[in-house]
Length: 307
Image 1 (cartoon, one colour):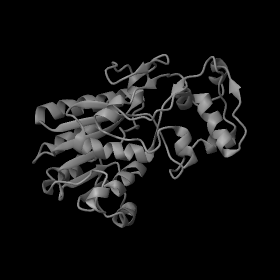
Image 2: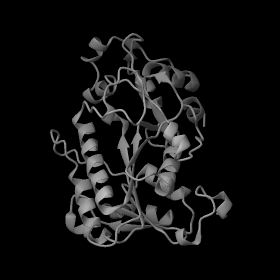
Image 3: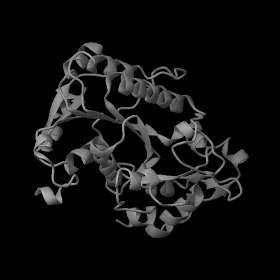
Image 4: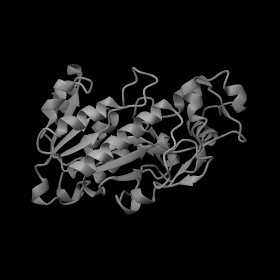
């Protein structure tokens, strides 16, 4: 790819042999890799040898290991100049509010020369329920679920690491990720099942980002992200959850989902889904545009779903 077509622009010579390590190289991680210029050395930390052919086909060197095995983490020390950390905290201890994976990773990185930058994919769930208010990154975290508390723990560990080790850590707070070419990445499956949404009076604001725009934000944060900084990664859409599913149903030519009261939903819907229906917020993406200089390819979910 010519440098003037690279998502990073024309790279100075000192960046051309940067070694990029992707931890948690799933769908978004692969999109990050595809958008990076070939002058960079790409690596992915994976516990599954079955994924090696897929990674190598993308020009990524697989590194076998497991975030739950500290011995395998030691090989990562001094290996990468920049790291994208997209791996989730463990879920084997449902009541635990800690993320031992991120803590173990940071401990291993301290063993040798440190990376220049580390980008972490967190969740907008750390804000908790904001009663539909528009919020920016100065909003205090107020997690309502154990799942979100684990992300708060990871964010805290990363920011302490960044300050102590003089590593530029940048945290991306990510809402719902979608894309037509992502497994389960559209509302179609839920619409076909006829899963209800909330009545307008009970409904909550929901936020979204197309997977390709999220990948571009990860890349920009690797080079442009301010140290120990948080950025909301969302598009410009301002829709309540029910309206989002109505929009998708109309685009797909499917029936709109039935509506129900929140009290009635508590007896019919899974707890995880109910937790998303209990938090309402509208994320401000000014930092994404002004600081990371991301121009959204899919500024609204209507644009992205039509693609």
